[in-house]
Length: 354
Image (cartoon, rainbow, N blue to C red; front, top):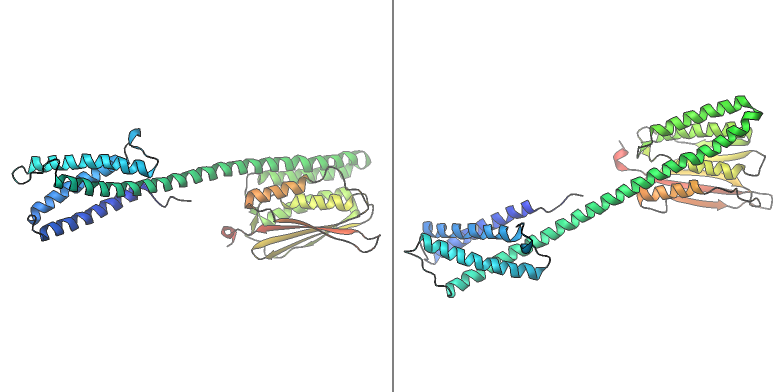
């Protein structure tokens, strides 16, 4: 967000306005026969130079006494500078043109100069005051947005750091269980876990990663889980072609798949099908992860961080709470299982599309 207003632009506008005003004054005074063109031009040049100098002094001075925070203060302050302007201008003209100009103080000419200068200085002062308020508001918004962005980044980093111990704890427990029963399989799982963690470290600080790379990392995770659960775990994937150049935030898919596997395989010894689909529709990447769950079984303890962490990260990234939806499709009969579906909608960011 860039400042649409600036004091420099305002000053240039004031200069142009004073030049136009001076030309109008000169034309009018010459027309009514006040004096010749040369003399009138000299008087108006001096008057408007003094006017601009006092405008700058009254609005852009570093003295705290001249700073204002209300319209009334601006108008009163400009009246003081209008008095200064009237006395300075009369003194200058009488000093330079003592043989041609004599303005009594007080007098009608003095009050006319005072009134006109007060109107002009007040108008310029009010415009400067409004522009300054707009600039301060924009700067305040920029500062608040910057602070909020830093807070969001810190929370996103914290959530990513929590994700690794969460997944690592489950994997190490599985490896620990396999060491005694099948050391070779435990070694294979440990190697796959090492490859998976290496991939996650590479993209730790990235806001967006290639969608194809994220799916490759998901395959590494699924390889670990297949070693863990063997033939009981069946993964059905439906992914489109042509994913080159497409990007999504990292660490969103794996927690959802992990949650589906945990609920799908909990308290069951049979084959469990986890379905993962990806579609691109209505400016979103739509991921659907479905898993069966026996409605009569007790939910496994310690679950929930993955889903809550994903929901929180989506809110921090897109300021929306509706991008992750959980639905249940009930089975028919007492022997059927329910199907749980996690639907993840990731907005397609325009600058990532080629």
